[in-house]
Amino acid sequence: MLRGLTTVNFFTPDLAAARDWYTELLGIEPYFVREVDGAPAYIEFRLGDLQHELGFIDARFAPTDRSEAPGNTFTYWAVDDLDATLVRLAELGATPLQPPVEHAPGYVTASVVDPFGNVLGVMFNQHYLDTVANLPPKGEGR
Image (tube, rainbow, N blue to C red; front, side, top):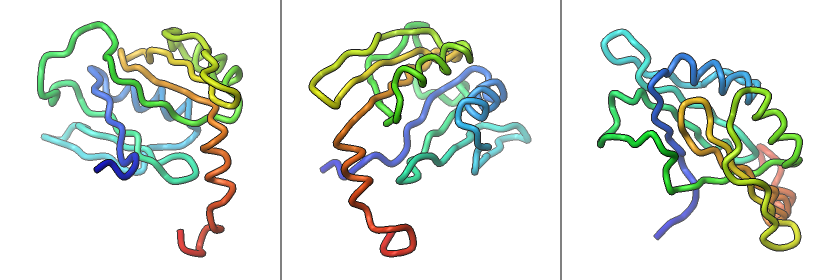
């Protein structure tokens, strides 16, 4: 049974460029880097209220051939201001894929394709905000 998001991994043909781009977007450095044969092969960021993991794998380790088209799986990351997030992503070179769509009051999604061909979904999600607001303070059971 699914219990929750652990790690989202993207494959990229240019790991150094992906690291730099996402460091700029997120405002943090990757907390974990794994090298293979002296070169970075995997990097990972921890972000958000629950420290979800966003990882990038050098495309040479992809289990199958990858199409040039974006994939059919979307993972949405919670954001406080969807419009401002989309502006920032565009400033950094992301290409719009799905414009904002309101699915119900308090639930709006959009997506972009990052410069490395990965779909990055962003979402204003009231349920997420309500859940985080009810978490115990850090250090008290979390």
